[in-house]
Image (cartoon, rainbow, N blue to C red; front, side, top):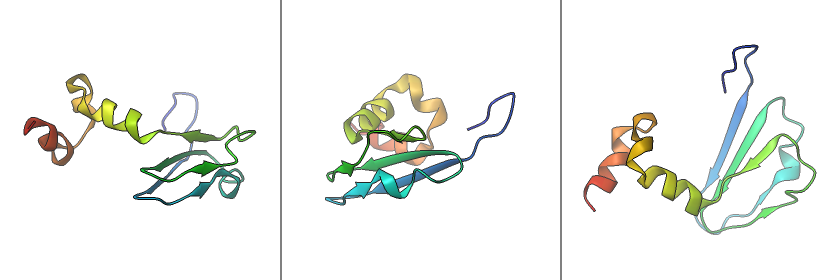
Length: 83
């Protein structure tokens, strides 16, 4: 993430399938952590100020919206062009 005042580190952890993520494992990282799991659970999501949970359905809806395609690679948008 880039802010005018300073640079902030960002970490992304994405798991495919029924994989459970525990946000406690990421809360001590210096930066913002984004967690995504397609069918699993995210545990201990309370009291973690630096952890953002992205629901797979929300991510899909974001990617499907043509107004957002300017930030997505063509390899992703091509899947929606076929619909």
